[in-house]
Image (cartoon, rainbow, N blue to C red; front, top):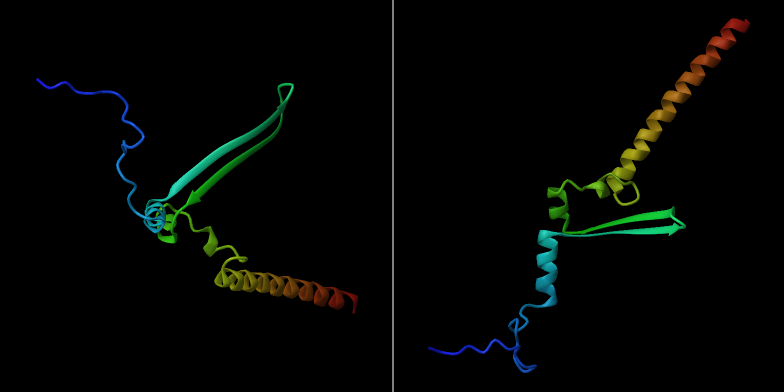
Length: 114
């Protein structure tokens, strides 16, 4: 029967195997699967909560984020030219409706004065 040595290997041994892959491989893996980093910061003074900051960070590729149901950049006018055009068209429509209502009210008022 063979005796096994269960002591910690010396510094010359690699207990977890050699590091494999590059930074690009790691980044591709993270973007493909996504990673969530979450944290809370609380500031209390004499058992009175003064400030709470909740941080949530989701790092992923656009495709992975869409699969997770996250697509806010498509509707944010600051980040999407299509969303900016849609917001501008919507504002234009609201202003035209408001102008028509005001002109109609002005016509009714002018007709009542005559």
